[in-house]
Length: 383
Image 1 (tube, rainbow, N blue to C red):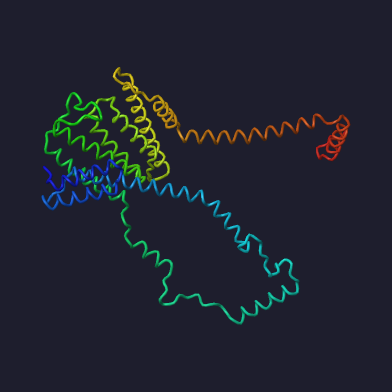
Image 2: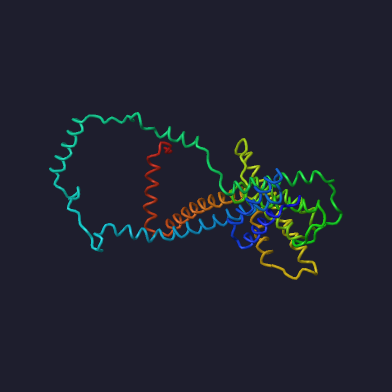
């Protein structure tokens, strides 16, 4: 559907702001474009919602990075603040001030006993204090219940996810209106290729939307949802690009990353361990496919730029994923047990060596003790 001139102008302004990394301003322009288009046509536009959701996501990421940087600076400032706090014991001029109160340990014992007896008398005279709440006061549990009933505001990541998910639903509705056919040859060769037909354009939009949905889920640590979104992104990218495409290897990598941190709760501990192991093995498989895509792309004669460091990093990551954490834990337990037994054996051996290295004169003492023991034994033979 063609956009009006007013909406088109807002979109162009938003795109420029987005390119300039002025995400907050860009999100506002795209929001106005969505509202104006809805007023004009009575319908939401998937493309406008996608741009709006993308700007919201980028804005949320930029703000979280700024807040993260501030928290790190605050952590660095803590030692200085602690030093300043230590100066409180001084009188403000840098000189130490001494209290006139005598420490209890240095006070006269008679004075201490008298003070304690006087305090006990005062407590008995006053009686137990009334700890009941006034009618206007609330208990901590009541306040906690009220806080739980207050609805939490959605974060900017949540809002971005909702907008992007709305765009996804509209794109999928558009795709249903066209015949579902998978071409024998991928219609797009690379990232910069533009779709030439409507079906390819819709699938590309769906792949991009699912990619951003997955990134939002990663940022909010919803790793299970992220793995689903990245898997749907991969499904459409496989229909659009050749197997060695950078976008396909990227999707495999992102799925592996999401699966690595996915924690699923089973009915019991054993089932939970099985689910975690299944996710780990799936992460390993996707990492292998990501590496295979990169190697295939690097083998092409037209590939001039090769990042060997990237390949090495991914292969190292694969090795880490292939390690079975349960087996490593059992091995650590065995190593600890061996260490304990080895130390005990070593101590026993050293004691035996010390006994063997004693002077010969000590042997007579040992023999005498043995004779004494035999003499006192109830099983002594008699002639």
